Length: 496
Image 1 (cartoon, helix red, strand yellow):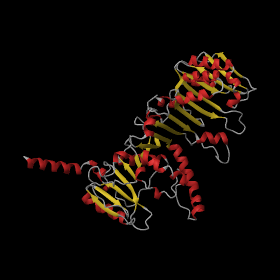
Image 2 (cartoon, one colour):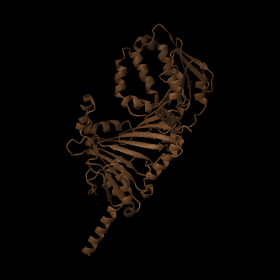
Image 3 (tube, rainbow, N blue to C red):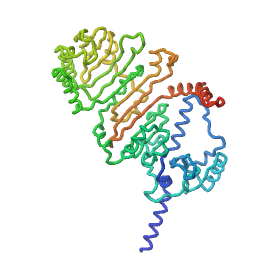
Image 4 (spheres, rainbow, N blue to C red):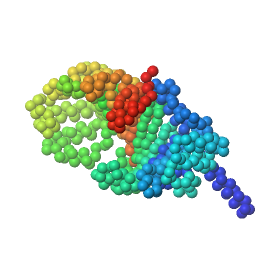
């Protein structure tokens, strides 16, 4: 009976060693950075699709590479390892881990291809082809718990490419190019931060062609920074307001206002006028948690004032209206204009004006500067200028969903959009060049995850990427030629 148990245990060990988790035991524990592709097939499909959207009808692949030898159903990885041990070596070592179909047949095909590409060592461990540069350790299966933890490199969404930078494994001595002032903070950073996870997605969640970049910290357990950020986690469903970001705007901002804090109490207490302090504190308590602000113009040299619009969430918008009205009527704000860098001799006027789709509009006037308000059931709507069309539009017309909306992380704390085309149109200067209508907006988000780690995201549609790529193709060769004296390189054009 005891012999039977040992046979079963040995069989289980064989099954485990040959399981799909084999890759997780191949990466050395001291890896400085690890690239991880959980679903190679999806990444290649998305990459080919995006390449076509960028105008490349036949994306180039390495000539002679035996793609049919690769297993696209199992994850791939690559690692950057510490500087080689050889004297005088300044280059980091690399290892690449590719799953193979029929390894006994295809290992030699892959090995022979890379033999023509440089000085590499090729090793087969189970069904993984491992390519190592000089200075890398011998490819092997590491004991349980002794290899790099690939779970750190996994993205929250598997359809992408992850790069994990292990801050705790970086030796400060290799950061000679980093300014000394920054290096002084590095030990403290290593004490708090395990690493940083980067992600590249070649489409949005809704499969709209584009590219999405993410960055997420990986704080160590017990980190003070992590515990302090956890308080900011929690969803206000800001993603539902992403449709209010104006794609025509120079800059759009969506944010979640945290509840009033002790720090805010200290700010109000520092104001010299107790009445003003009390009224501003009361107004702040009525607002939130969500707000959206769009800077839509007024940046031209000839412009007299900025143009903007937006929405503020409020449980009782009429209470907000009364608070603003009382603030202006009391004269406390007018009396403290100098503290707010305003003209103390210019009267600040508040007026309620019946009309509009919501029945009442209000206007604040400071000389030629005007801000108009409308009061909905759960929000305060505002827009600058004398034209009320934008104000009424925000009050009546639901905004269409943006292509990026499905990629906004639920519970985001901050949303940002910027339109390069709008900036070019607004400034029309040599620095910005001729306005390009194809420059679609760039979207970004910031979120504190439930574990306290911040996550940043940047998304740009294929149309905007194509315009940027064409600019790179146009100007990069000359820049390289001027900087390095090289012959002009040939880059693929995306022009049809």
